[in-house]
Amino acid sequence: MSGNITGRILVFVLLCIAVIWAFFPILFMISSSFKPGNLIWSYPPKLIAEPTFANYQNIATLFPRFWKSFFNSVIVTALTTALTLTMAIASAFVFSRLRQPWLKAPAFLMIFVRMFPGIVVVIPLYPVFNELGWLDTVTPLVLCGAAFAVSMATLLIKTFVDDIPVDLEEAAMIDGCSRVGAFIRITLPLLTPAIAAVSLVVAIGSWNEYLFPLVFTSNDARTAPVIIAIAMSNEDGVAWGGIMAMATAYLAPPLLLVLMLHKQITNVMTMGAVKG
Amino acid sequence: MATNASTAAPIPRPNKRSRYSENLLAATAVTPPILLLLLFIGIPAVALLATAFTDYSPGIEPEFIGWKNFTTLFNSSVFYSILLRNIGYVIGVVSLQLLVALGIALILDNELPYRRIWMALLIAPFAISPVVGVVIWKNLLDPSYGLVNYVVSSLGLPTVPWMSTPLTSMIAVVIVAVWRGFPFIAIILFAALRGIPVEVKEAAKIDGATSFQIFWHVKLPFIMPALSIMALFETIFAVREFDTIQTMTGGGPGTSTSLLSHYLYRTAFGTFRFGMGAAVGWVMLALTMLMAALIIWRAYRDMFPKNKA
Image (tube, rainbow over all chains, first blue to last red; front, top):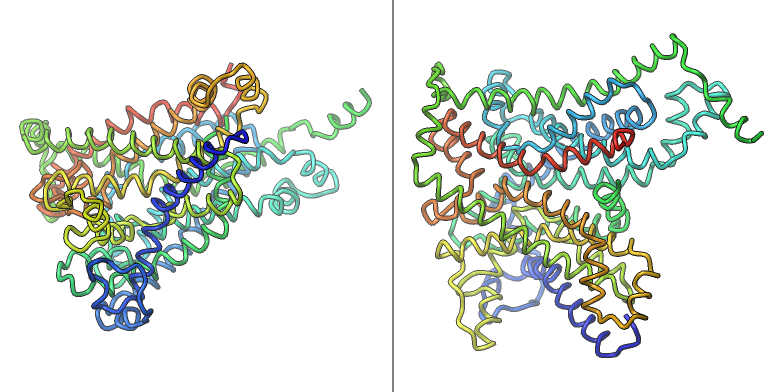
């Protein structure tokens, strides 16, 4: 704070401890995934070993369903994020710009229903999806994922729309734009950074989802977290190299995005929780 | 005055036609998400509440059995220990998360070189899926070969039999939950700390307040609203904890680390007693709504600020 040297050193030491607590576990796993099999459980533990890609090459033989499940995760995440954001942008616009009194009912429903835990809808939905032939397809994963994400996305985007003055849209409307046209042409471009950050938060949630794929899929539509969890519960100890490689491959995309876009994510998260 | 008039004038007074088209526009935009919320959350939740009064199991015609599931549940010692454990888990995880997050937010609130880089590294666990988090910590906490016990033993301390007793299994789960959960809270608290006017802190310093006094009398009251909202949010999420339990301990040894969500899952999909599982769902919903009432009210008020008055 002040020029107090001891204070500054203390702060720096605490910062180092915090960073080790937060980031070192991730780093250690990434490093382990490049260790040769016999060094993963070497004692004392090795922080860095001669790097090898053997664990990654072995994924396909040890866990033949992994890459397919990784691909499923990509599909489910892309569809869930696209569906969620499309709905969220449209409703955020309406909630922010229109003053219809009846809009309070859907708004309340959105805020209320998002509090429900996922596990309570799984029981009643299971027989329905079975009846519809949706089990072991990506459909229930996308629809349930979007249902649970859309409220948060709408509320976040609405706070950003609120911050953009409506005057610009009104000026465009006088020039002959329709209400929606004015929003799309004038306000939407200004929202791009916020929408990108909200998309990222929604995508991370969908990418990391475990419960829905666990219950609603059995084979073809399984996503990677379920496959990794199954590999882990097979307590052989032998496959840890492959598990580390799968886990590293799976955390790489969200980790890289968060490290690159942490500022935008921070803004969005702060907006959603502190405002008001 | 003239400028006021010119900005006010263009706003079209809604006539009947435009009011109709506005209603149509609002309905078109709001219908898809509402439909999705009702079909996949609202109606299933109501159906679950109804299922709890039946002996429903897949493939069997459900029969109404009144309160039987609830009386069985509330007479079961397993359920009570799980309920109590879940409450203890919530208190432990939420208070640890808040403490760690508050500490880190306070550290970040100092003048730091390269603060952005530190922040990026500190929020990284937010990106990690629960399953991958479990992979990471199962390896670090391995009782014989793990790094944590290696460090502990080289400091001359007794090693911990991680994940072999109910207590150490539970602590391992708490570690993963705190590790994944704190970044979000830390970001919010950091933003709240940044919102404190510099003059206030300066004035306290001039008055000779120590760092701790500034924290206790200036910073803490200022961030209290953010802190309490975060506590509620994290409580709601800790009540439903499932992923880490299911993948790290599987509820074991025995049912010694099972929590409500996990117990519900096992009852419904392990023994196919959907009716009984639904009764557990009631308990979870009740706990959640108790906590969520304040958040719901606040979010609703923020959405329609006119209601404030």
